[in-house]
Amino acid sequence: MAKTDHVFTCQACGAIWPKWTGKCDACGAWNTLVEESARPVVPGALAAPTGGRKAKALQFVDLAGEADPPARLASGISEFDRVCGGGLVPASAILIGGDPGVGKSTLLLQAVASLARCGASVAYVTGEEAEAQVQERARRLKAADANVSLAAETDLRKIVDGLKALKPDVVIVDSIQTLWADGVEAAPGTVAQVRACAHELVRFAKKSGAVLILVGHVTKDGQIAGPRVVEHLVDAVIYFEGERGLPFRILRAVKNRFGPTDEIGVFEMVENGLVETPNPSALFLGGAGDRPSGAAVFAGVEGSRPVLVEIQALAAPTAYGTPRRAVVGWDSARLAMILAVLETRCGLSFSGRDVYLSVAGGLRITEPAADLAVAAALVSALADRPLPSRSVVFGEVALSGEVRPAGRTDLRLKEAAKLGFELAFAPPQKKNGAGAGVKVRPFGHIADLAAALGVTAR
Image (cartoon, rainbow, N blue to C red; front, side):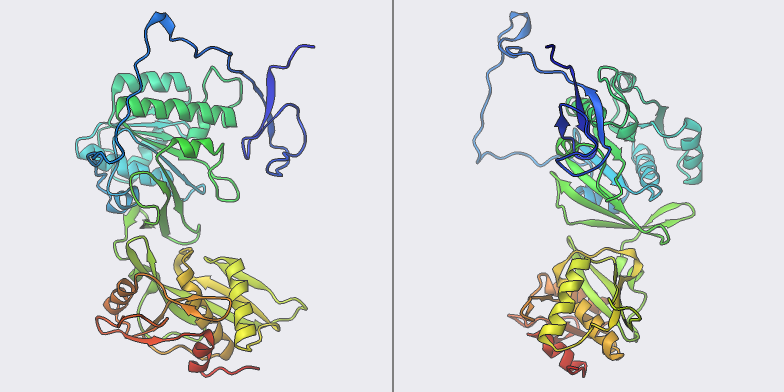
């Protein structure tokens, strides 16, 4: 019986199966298997070099050897350079993903226009729009005067040949899911096509020394669509986040071989494009005045940058047998944990109330130090008593109710003082953490916080 030369690849996780089934057993997704050509490696194909030439011996170096830091190419947009680790590194590949309409193309067009004005040779390849559409956007962003080479093409062979002839310093491909390679028997956007096109473009970037920036679509779960091997091929994976109804946009790195992975860049979407926000605390916070009950200001740290953001909570009487829990900008599982700690360790009851929690401004918080701020907002909402004026809160809460220390305390307090705050609810410090006029009120247990707000068990 002849062996089949086709396999079925899951478009969600990249798993390969010999026959079609409705459900992928690897990831559980339905109707994601697509038939693709299977090209097995011929045994012995790597046994000897072609043309009878002797292969060059592999050279090893000492681990203690010193190497020069990679050169950086400044894009002219400081928030973008911050997330990239200080600028773009030649011969590197960057993958940028985000929801449709969040502003990925706008950000990259502004970046390449700034690079071109600084003398860099830039090529912008679009597979989703016509050249006239990109030119119209450039005029709206006042970037049409920049010397950027623009092309609308989806054929990988033509793109690579054109880039080899142009020899640019920076290449933008928008997006990788629209490209197709004629040597792969699969439709554009499938796992095989995305993998093959990304591999060829990254190979071109490594050989030519150009900076390659790929735009990737995301799934409904917020992950970059396509096989995970694409994220392994590139040097940096960056997400562009933002709520559709809010003007704020967050650029966040989740992988970076040339810089930290916890830095963020903050932008504001205006009529003429994206504007950098060097002081995001003032943008997310507003002011340091009195706040209503259920509001707590969290002093957080994103990478090397302190960010103050308001956390809002509402505990309303429920009309149903099962109270509702709604969260925006925070982890819903962590909210359930904080509620359980408040009920078990402090004797507070949320069983008859719907709980709503929101991080103001559209920022998403993942730092554990936000636990105490969330707890303070919840206690304040339950008792209908506002927190003390001009106060910030930070600290991690354990299941025992203990408040654990948070890192970078001095940085948090300096940012709070700069914005006019005078009091900080924080974990006990090993040394005097007060600085720049901010008084620290330590709490070793979450019950101490409830008692300080005058809330007793019910």
